[in-house]
Length: 292
Image (cartoon, rainbow, N blue to C red; front, side, top):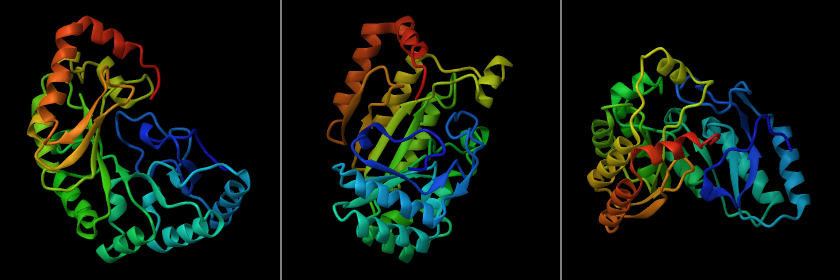
């Protein structure tokens, strides 16, 4: 198997099999990101992809979903993705669906009809690293787009009924910015139809530009209690019917449920965490997170 860097996938995709069709990240400039720094962006050759699919077929492992590797494999042209799906189903007839990470601008080169074709070919539940609906933060973190662009592109997914996942990165605005960040991001997602919103918390590592900003006094991290209050406000402001999960290693407490049915229970769980632990103990948890 060809992998240019380690396997990256959300926790809930642990039982999938993995296939690299791109390397690195097509953007690679987000100030907080540590992933894919060891691998420049490139498209895997079709011959290499087919060889890896054959190797998976010979493995005898039991799986029914492929999670594509690379930061944003959805960037590939529609015809490439359709050809890859065709090869997967030819050699691996037990596979029922294909997903992966995605950037919002991966949709730029796809029409609504092409997204429909990909849905019909079994592509679903791509994880879009939107991070925020706050334009000031999106600029500050070099995400490369604004909230209105997210609306325009992700509505293609909604129009054809392809289920997709949006994320929320708590603490992204730093000290004093949490409630605004929560409200702006909830406002964005309430205009879309993500099948799931997956939340995690900003956790800085030394090799990121944002860590250097902290060292130079240009960015002050949110306190742990601010993070909890931000997550509460985000959940409180959500109105779109969706699944909400915050089970990442960066979360000191794992919560999940449906919006709107379980909003109060999730907000109360966060409150219990604050009341029981306090700032110092929550900071100890954050400092114990050594990798994502």
